[in-house]
Length: 258
Image (cartoon, rainbow, N blue to C red; front, top):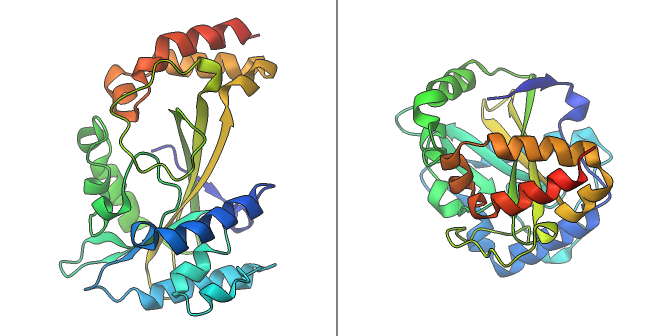
C-alpha cells in the first residue's frame, strides 16, 4: 500500500496554487455540484463532516472561502472550500461495513464520484488490476486497525493528456497525436486518519501535476520516471490509460536522463 506515518503538522499540504485551485472548486460547486459533492441519504454524515470542519478551523491559520454564495453550505462543502485537498468520509453502513458516505471530489482522475458512493474500500478499488488478490484484505485490515491521532500518507501517480484537474471522463481512447512533452505527470498525495469523536475515517487527495516538458531540466527525475514506466505491468498501464503513450514517452525521458 506504500503508507507511511507522518506528523499531524504534515496532514495537509498547501502550496502556491492554492488560490487558483480553490477558485476552481468554487466554480465546480456552483456549476456541477451534483457531480462533485455527494452524501449517502441513509447515513447520518453531519456529525463526522462537522468534526472534520472543526479540525480544519483548529489547525489555523484557517481562511474560509469568504464567498457569500456559500454562506449556507454544508459542513463538508465549507471544509472542502478551505483546503486544496479533495475530502472523502468513510462511515459504517447498516451492515457495519466502512463505506464512502460523504465526499467532495473536485479533481477526480478518470473516475466519477457517483460510481463510488456507498462502496467499501475493496469495491471502490475493485477495477484496479490485481487489487482484489493482492491488496483488498490488507486495506480492510488496515482500516479496522487505524486509530486517532495517527495520520498516514501515500502517493500515487499517472499520466494525463491534459492539465484539466476535473477529469472524470473515461480514458479509453488515447490521443497518440499528443507529443510526449505535452503530456502531464499527475500525482496524488493521499492521507488517511480516523476522527477521534465520530470514529469516521477521512481520506484526503491532494492533486499535483507538472507537464512532462518540465522534466527536461530535471534529468534525475526524468530517468527515474522512465524506469518506473518501463517497469509498469501492461494491465496497470492500460487501466491507468497511458499504455498507448508509453513507447514515445519512455524514449523522450531517456533522452533527458542524467
